[in-house]
Each structure stands twice: as structure tokens, then as C-alpha cells.
Image 1 (cartoon, helix red, strand yellow):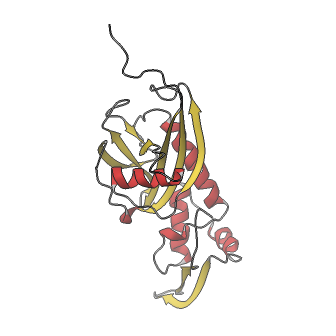
Image 2 (cartoon, rainbow, N blue to C red; image 1 turned 90 degrees about the horizontal axis):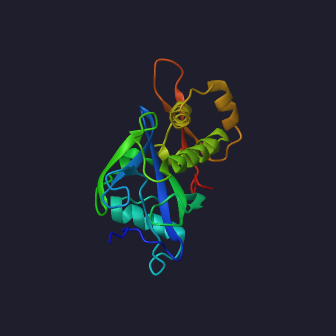
Image 3 (tube, one colour; image 1 turned 180 degrees about the horizontal axis):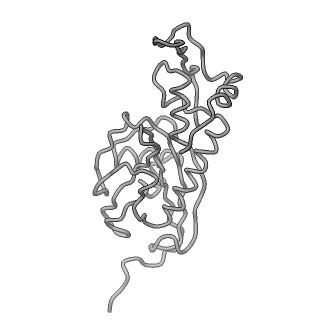
Length: 223
């Protein structure tokens, strides 16, 4: 008699998934992992793992553990986005997945394969592979939250170098949003910001030099 490897559960499976975004000159990208175990073995997915109640004091601790143990990644700023649940989203039975997201400097994330993962890769949002479970829907929710935040001028200052110009900052915002911003509108919106500090330093050049800025101490993108 054949029996399914996924027997009905008497309680929901609780897990965390993480949408890890980074940007470069080509635009915004997301880090995906190729699963090494069933279900959905060899499929691409957001990094994720099952909650361990005796080890994880909070859900965010589970998210940080997953990134550390599976990808050797440490993320200082991470936030909870929303909860996905239902009987059909995972073949193991009724499940709850808590989605987290983080926006990180790509050059600071040297993800490596550790456990339960075959491979990791940064993917352009325009060239995503088919994804396991409901992770395409999760990624869409995380991306919407990220872009809404930047649209409302919560600035991604943790992606910037120690000092930067307003042009540098605008290009970073454009990479996240996937579109060009009007320069004059962008700079008018920055005038009242307390998150950027004007420096008495300039970027040299043949034309009018550009002033340098730095991020306010203690700035938190996840707010």
C-alpha cells in the first residue's frame, strides 16, 4: 500500500520566507535559492524555513536564523511584510508563512550555499524563473511594499556610501522603483528631510561641483 510522504497535519506548519533585494547598475534584483529537499525540490524559491519554537524567540529571529544557516547572510534591517496562509499553498498541509523583506547593498552579501539549498542566485525582476509554492505572490507583495516606501520618500540611505551626492541618491531610488524620477521634483521633496546631512564637501568637476551628503546617525529604513 502506497502512502503519501506528506501526511495530514493536526496543526499548521509555521514558516518564514525572506525577500532579499539588492540593486546594481542593472536595477533591482532578488536573491533566490534552489531547494535541495522535497517538497518542490530543485525549484527556485525565496529563502525560508520552518519556525523552531525552542530556538526562535520571535519570528524575526527565525528569519535571521534562516539567512544565517542556509546562506551565511546577516541582515541588519529586516521587516515583516504580511502573512500568507491556507490549506493549499504547501503540499505538507495547512500552513502559515510569514513574509519578511530586506533591502541590502549587494556587494555586502556574499551568499553561499550551506544547508538545504542547491544554489543561490541574484535574479533581475524582469527575468524571474518559475517559483515554488506561492512565492511569486509573496515576492510581489514585498516589492510593492518596498516601492511604496521609496515612493513616499523613505530614503534607502543604508545602500549609500559614507558620503554621496543627491544624483547618487536619485539613481539608487530609480533603480529600486524601476523608472526615471524628475530631478527637480525629487530634490524639492528632499528639502525637508532630516535623514540626510549636508556636508561642506564637494565633488570636483569642470562644471558646478556637487555637494556631498551623509545619512543621519541611527537612520532606519524599516522605520
